[in-house]
Image (tube, rainbow, N blue to C red; front, side, top):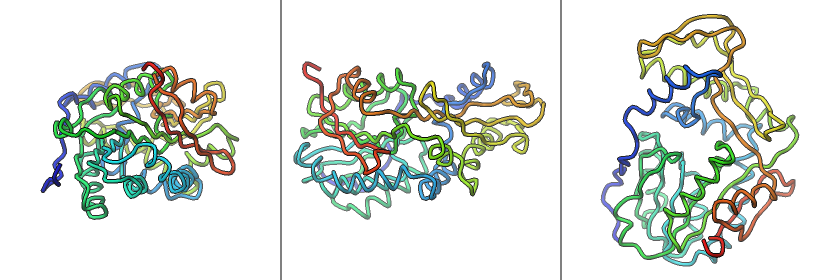
Length: 327
């Protein structure tokens, strides 16, 4: 498979053109109000999230990066040569070279992301970093069914799914199982999956990771309102909301909310929405899993845990999954 002269994103036909508008109108019209977290990631939102990953409070990125540095060679030994790497929600692809450098003759890298301009920039940077590996970006919402690029039909090697960043926690457990099962079918019989998973821990550690002292996470969360105003003719008053991170112990998850500070009415695409003081828009969940819970989740989706790597304080885990027997 030869290097393509231009890494033009394959735009998955299954991505509805009006998905953002549909989700916003439905979410703001529901009680309680909510928005899918995928819409936090326009270009500016993606840039803000990259800033979050460098904050002192956000331990996840540096912990996972160190773990991947330790385990990439072992993953490469298991997957073997000529692998295709498919990364779901690729973002900046900053951790990806740790895998690509360890693999023997990787045949292609397929980053999947919804933020098309950010995807273009990340692929251009990675192509300079790894010039011998074909880049086949896909613009798609990986939380919905989508197809891989048609160029992969001629590749015969194993496929390695890559899902770092504890993004699996953004799904409710049932949705996470459905996603992992769908990914398994997409990757095919010669598959493995690398998943980064954040563990449950003291809220004194968790809450600051989602509500940092510099307010970058607040900007990230509030940016979705600016996006609604810009793209959907909205008039939501940004100064009427504040960012709030909550730990839901019963569900073992962090929740992000945008909380109204006063009563008001606002419109989006001509539809009116009323807000009361203290009412929130629930914008993101981040579920936390112990090893027992994640093994059960993976098993329910047709995967077995082949290897697991933990940091010294057991705050974060990198799992290597293989198809379950008979799957």
